Length: 213
Image (cartoon, rainbow, N blue to C red):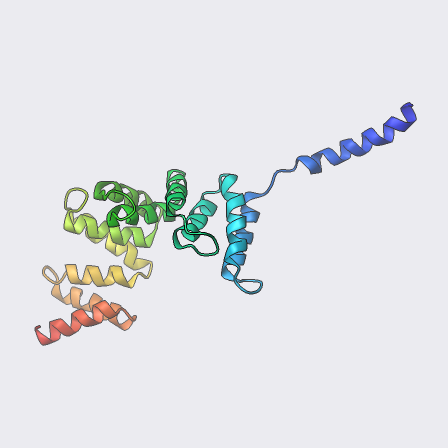
């Protein structure tokens, strides 16, 4: 009896670690990204959504954000904006800068939720601190216009500078336009640089300045 049980117990003991091995949430997330971007063949948003769903349930904030994007647009899955917002909120609370940025935009637009620019500003603030160039741009504009909180020109300039340094031509255009009153030479230089980089808004603004219209 002992001879029969011993080999079985040994096999079970050896197999136990493999059976108990947790799923690698980052591996699953990266598989989803590869499917979404078509890195190994045609893009497969449905397959990507399945991977993101799996990783999201394991607490991966990036997967929660990506799945939220797919659900928001109905890309590869049925459109479900309510669940998308829930995923953005969960990921934003976990510190994901892109979820914070996306949710901030939602609160600025006020179509899916009650418009709340102070909440949007707080979300952009969190995202900008993580180096998100688009959040830096949005937050800079809010400080510039006094939306969602006090106006602060110096803070606006600093944020737009930070975004611009990451190659954001829209930040370059906004900053150039802002500086036209206090530093017209630099303002026009920034607008010109943004236009040369392909920013159509900066190009139109330069034309207005040159024609006086």
